Image 1 (cartoon, rainbow, N blue to C red):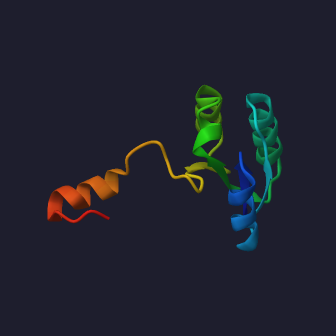
Image 2 (cartoon, helix red, strand yellow):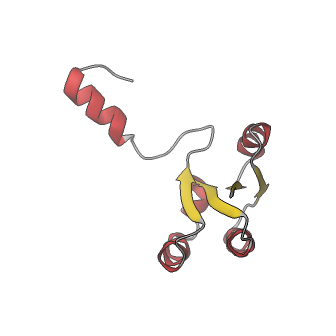
Image 3 (cartoon, rainbow, N blue to C red):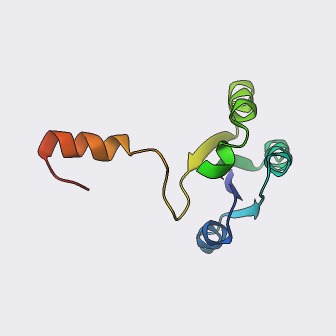
Length: 101
């Protein structure tokens, strides 16, 4: 089983490519759907990594795929700019020990 990246920017793609993770860059909803369908049909792919920005383009479609397929696992990752959501773990640590991470 291998990883596959669906990204909206070159930086994330290059960084993960250096770690041996192949993928593709897409910019719109139809590109996301096409890339997901291609990755799901590849039986060697076990985990699909998709950037937060792309997840926001078609959240319903991604949810349907997650419910329909147990493999590959579809996982949202932040790009180099981070996530627009606040980190729950960082918030918990800050609240518990008073240290900002």
